[in-house]
Amino acid sequence: MKLFLTCTCCLLIALSSCHSGRSTAPAKDSTATDSIKDVYAALKGTWSGDFGGSPIFITVNFANGKQAAGYNIHKGLRRNIHGAMKKDGDNWLLELTEPGDNPYDGRFAINITGNGQQLKGNWTPLNEKNTSAKSFVLSKEVHTENEGFDFFDSYDGDHGEGILTFRRDGSCELQFYPKVNDSTRAEQATIVRGTWQKVKGNHEKITVIWKTNSIWTDKSTTFDVAFYPNDQDHPEKGGYATEFKSDSLSFYHMP
Image (cartoon, rainbow, N blue to C red; front, side):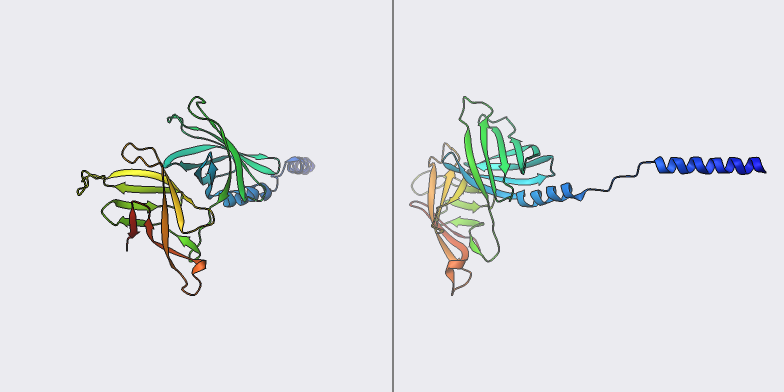
């Protein structure tokens, strides 16, 4: 009996020692995760700014604190981007690269400011023989319902020119029917892509920078925009576009 009690006591002491020496799982630190989530919330969306004299739009649709991805649109050309996201002091740094199968592809190094209000960075070409490096500052594109001047829709050509479409990500598309002669247009539409830009200080003008196209030779087109106000008593608060006109083109809102 004494032997049994002695063995039992030794066993309990051993188990107690093993339990006390066992390391417990560390408490989960949510600070880093929350920080990443906050940065992601601020980062996600579309950013725009000047890029060597013409507008660029960068849309970020994925970020997890280690990787980020999205796409950019410049002069109507859309390029996917992806790469690393990492902490850089008090800020975050994005290193995003275009696919590389276009002669004008390059690499973005973007700094997200601490308050998440701006993206500052530079772009370097993968092939320096084709173009030069550029620096930029981007601001978040914010669009809210019933506020501001909304023109993100499709518009019919007044004389059978085609269909003009504006999108929030900075892209513009013209399905254009070229003229065969003075009175007849081609049966097959040519798609011409571009990037839109608001004329600073004038919401009634929008400029489109077109992608180089052998049929559509204009580098840019500035449209006068007619808006129907959301609030008749306060038209300055915003409205939706009903008409786009340039020297040679007219488009109206598709009902």
